[in-house]
Image (cartoon, rainbow, N blue to C red):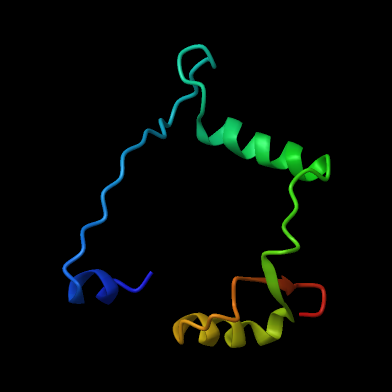
Length: 88
């Protein structure tokens, strides 16, 4: 995110969370980075995570700059871009 959005409007972004470096059992800490990522991978493996409606651009990796330019311009056309690395 462009920090000028916050500075020019004098906004403050607050957040709270815990992402410990060491692993804790689920009964002590239900969510951690490893379990969150495993959950997402499991959803993807079971075709339960439907992302197609969010992907607005599919580009070869050598055209990555186009997606970054759209983001820089705050284009309403871009939600998410997928890059084809095989063509690189």
